[in-house]
Image 1 (cartoon, rainbow, N blue to C red):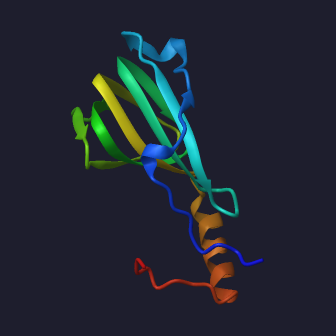
Image 2: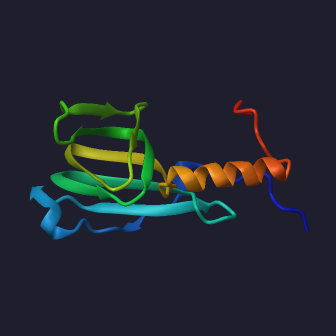
Amino acid sequence: MTTPVFEAVSLDSVELLPAPIDPSWIIEGSPVARSGQWSCSPDTTTSSWVWDCTAGTFNWYFEQDETIHVIEGEVIVQSAGNEPRVLRAGDAALFYADTWAEWHVPSYVRKHAILRPHIPRPLWFAMRVARKLRGKGRSGALG
């Protein structure tokens, strides 16, 4: 049996299950969120999800680094000390681990999200060295 080189999916086909927002985080409205995971890296550190949400305003805590790509709709995000930013279909953003952001969904938003735990710099360096010693270093080019 060979190990797959990649996984692929039509994001429209990912089954979304209820993913309630913590009621204490909701500022306004009654947002209803759903999510579905479609992949996880072999080392289990990185996962890919589809998430959607109806209208509402709420705080969101990012436990891990989360890179998002808005697929449909829009969201206005804001964090302490920063101007609000509108993210629409086609836009991408990176939310850092252990941070909060306020999300305002005017009507509906659907996003693709890639979650990865924050790796402290010394550990990241050790992992990079180990990878190079195993001969699995990358040049950094996308393929």
